[in-house]
Length: 215
Image 1 (tube, rainbow, N blue to C red):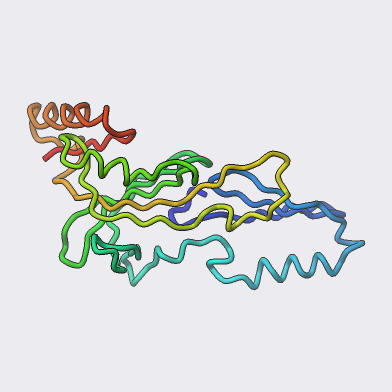
Image 2 (image 1 turned 135 degrees about the vertical axis):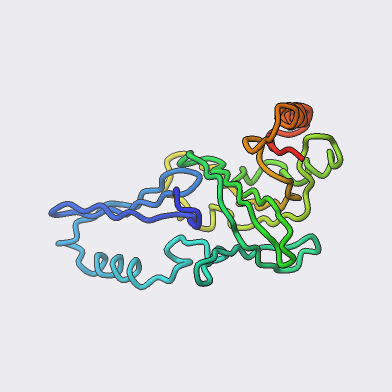
């Protein structure tokens, strides 16, 4: 799940007599029934074929993140909700295995404009982050939203009835923000550092995410 282009991942665990399939995604672990592959060879064969013959999407890869030569791109939408490829520069990853799993991508559009793309997995029954950010558009210290795309509910990946307790599904959200000159650690003077820190603190009461940018 630490890969930047993963929605979920399968893990196959075998002993000398039994096998069990596990699936990990942002809601946690899903385990399938264990069975004896000596007594159920057909089920074992179906399992192996399913895992080895699946395409990238079926194996849990996010095919909207792709490589072209030595450059990596993300296919999402622009401010007019039209499909658009963004060239990805670098990523600030999340260290969490489950949960929101937020990634921040530094990207460029076709005009070379610098942008910030936030990718996170929120609970499906929570209000969208972009709706909240739209309410505070123009507030100092809060990143300006240009576009938002929501897709991939984790319930699409999971088999109903396997969990002992109900699992709250999560929805992947991508928000494209206006890019700023640089991150706060690239300040050139004490004044620039204090101005950037001040803007982040000023915007903190209005949003759950701090964008440490200075301009």
